Length: 260
Figure (cartoon, rainbow, N blue to C red):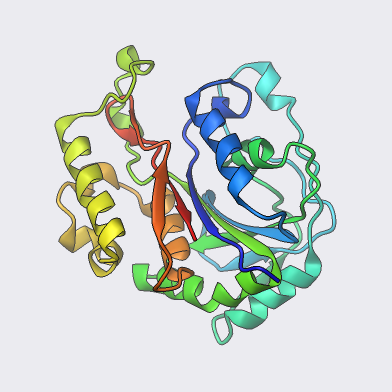
């Protein structure tokens, strides 16, 4: 079976699930370059807990894990099937790390709000893997490396978050302004993009110490860590290309990666 590419998707606002904009168009365009997967394994910023868990159910529920949005958004359902065999395989590949089989979670908006644009018929099974916040950065990168073999079995690995994500500093008055970012956000985006293109991942793993402005861009690691899973699953010879590479509201980036 053809090796599946990798995706890191800057998912941004939950409203991207129902709006028509340049970022949604970017998601729809990138899927044209991807063979039809057997299943999707998604690492979402919004399942950030003190354990490593993988969803283990036939019919994961659509989780509306946000507040204050239009009713239309809460009515969205994404009825993709689960895939218990894949969950078991993830558990096996991450051994000896302890990975629990979760019967309650489902698909949070970090997963369904973007996957619905890739596969609107919800006809590809989806499994989610949690982000264990009790672990150091290298753990997450190494998990990606250990999951690499899934790509040869038709599994599309998706990391969903935002490389720059500081909601407290968002300039909502300029939220609709195209590619609007504070100077520090522009600087860190350029620095991280350069390191990604050069394959210089060690500073990205040790971002707290080695990336300037990381305290502003990554005040909490939940939206950043999905990137490390994707980088860990990358083969050395593969190329990284960018899409949706824009800043929003001063302190958010929609930068997304396609790796093949």
